[in-house]
Image (cartoon, rainbow over all chains, first blue to last red; front, top):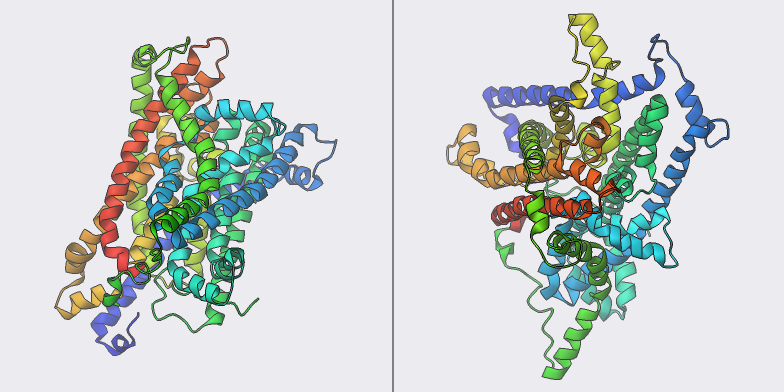
Length: 301
Length: 307
């Protein structure tokens, strides 16, 4: 596939390649169908009246109606959704504001701290959220006593920790793909200061990595249940859990929207990232190497 | 390509030819830049961990004691830990095998192909989302009124057991559904790093495809496969939401036992029981993830110059 000289090879090689393609397509189709069945079932469940099997759009009508006084039992869903969306923004902001400058700083000024930074960032992988909550309970009791109060959105502080490993990996892959030291030296030679290096050199070069780290953060925050449940706060997932007890069809419809919506968002972002990378420069000779095709591309600014 | 293994650009950066005091100041300043991050993680990551570890060894009066550990060493505790462990091991094995095959099929497709994008995108959503919505999806699929339940009954006349989803078998099925996508995301980059040159080199020296997999790709990928298995194990071991949404009547897994201990307000001794259970989880997951890190370091030997 990579070497054009092979295309004129023997029919044996051609047959092997065709067989591989058929096998690949079969495996992928079976896998995709298996993965899609529960999602399709979710959609069907949301529109099927359980007793008669008749199609019934009432669950969707309730969701489209939004937050009205008519459906009191859905009130938690809307407040939970609002908190979760606010927390998405807050968590992304804290995560990027905290992690990105630190990672750049470590690469440029404090390379000795690189191992420690990586260790700390990956540590949450070894500490399950349930465990973290047990230790976070006193911390949040303290926060509730400060002017911040006991609002749900401060769960973002804990969520930053939960996404740390994923965000770190995404940003780390991006930083590996660029020659940060040279870029920073060039910027400094031209008289750029620290903030200028960060905002004008690092951020534009890392846009795909920043997008993917933000995305993974949003996905984690929207899907988070454990911390909110054990600290008795209300976010999207705990609200879904609660609504499911009274109106499982609405919960199913909402879950379907969230699953498909997030997937669509991710795929679109991915496609956009590749497209801009491809138009900015000729296709990389080795497209399979992650990050390599994402070279500096300031043309869009 | 091969010459690039020398770490270019690192050597001449952090060594300013400054006198001793200047160097100390520079080091201090370098440390100051790290303060916000490490301060934050100290409060929200290290402190909670310390609270758990410390709390497990303290009695209600605050004195250091092993009573908490002794009280927790019951058949019930052993039971939940055992159930959690085998559930995680079985689903991790399923995830590794099925996800590995799917990841390989994906890796043979071009990076830019749409099916690959869609499947990886969907996988990362499923692997991250999991939880409550996954439980809903399976109630809609295999519950008493589920789509597949009805289909199987109408077409084959077979009745899916009505309590399947609140049984351990059901939990295995549901867990596999987030383990497989996680395996795809974790393993796909490893497969992508298998250089076409290695395969060409094998072919040039007269090696067959089987030989390539057995002698070249296999040994390179083995640590990554084992590492992925461990990651999946830890993932299942820590999962809480799915089981909580499916099984509400009993506490069968460690996280569920922790929840019921935290939420029990009649017995204050339960707080320390939660901390002991949490400590147990930390120990298990830390061991697994430690082994995972060692395996990855071994695997990194082959991926370093590809970065």
